[in-house]
Length: 169
Image (cartoon, rainbow, N blue to C red; front, side, top):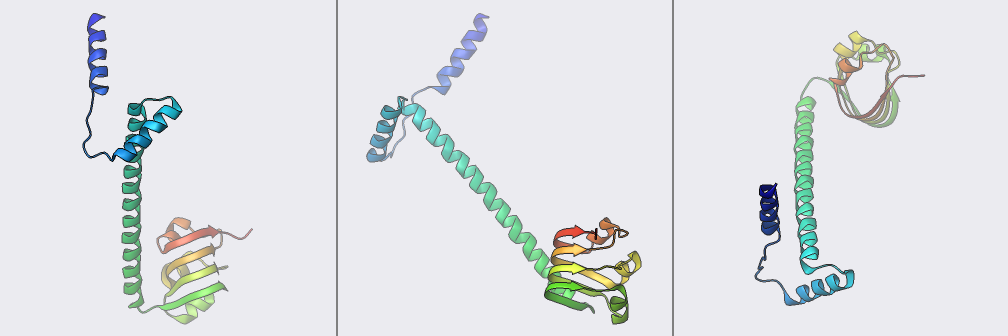
């Protein structure tokens, strides 16, 4: 037991030792003293809280920066993939609020179709074979309506930035 008390005392001494910080603005320090006085806390407690809050903000800013960088990277990658897709021999259907496309329309086009930037895309009679051979990609679609018979995992290999996939009720 006596040994544990010594260890606790050493920890407390290390955590509460006097620290001198050079270059602190005297007006800021005076404001800090006033806040401590007004709140009934010590300058050390207020300083510790301020430093802790600052370090938390720095950490969160680093995380946000990383997420933004990652988002830009994935958007750039998707953009380049889009450019590469545009070089393919496909029909591009894009920038439409809502459209219904039937299986026979895709087959009669005799080329794969890339659906892009569409509010609501309805493929009412799509089947697995037509999906495999005649749907090149589905990109930036708010709502995609497909028959319940379609395997969503197979479909999602061809989709990017689709907000919702549903089946008619």
